[in-house]
Length: 154
Image (cartoon, rainbow, N blue to C red; front, side, top):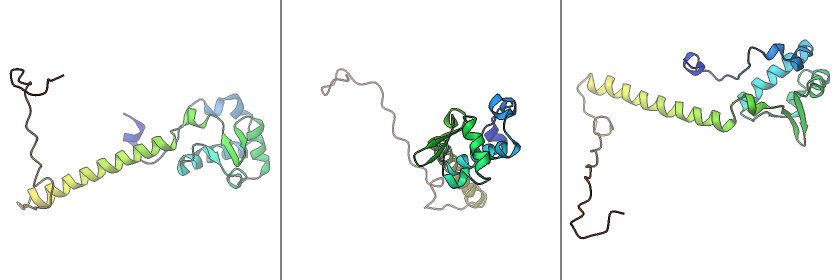
């Protein structure tokens, strides 16, 4: 079962090896906390690991410098970038696509349950309801009649 089925809240990924990685083991507690917080912030803001200086400095310059010196945070023209963020986390586009799918499926399921509760169970027909008034299926077309005049089927 996927993690999304277990817990629908937004999440980011840290492997079991994360705290044992050589770059992470060398960090102070404050820098470790800053790194995890920045990953969560990047995921929450859907910014693909691009961070503002004010966010990177939330715990002071020393933990930020530790992350930069460890190669976990890269300086950019307008702030910072978490090293290899998109290699380990979902991109903003992937998160938005997943959110759209969930919203669509949730809306569809909500409409179906509304139809069942308020129309089917009560014997009510609503002319505005898509489930009370399904669209007729388009007739299936058989194979083309090759003996009739008209455009060739290829």
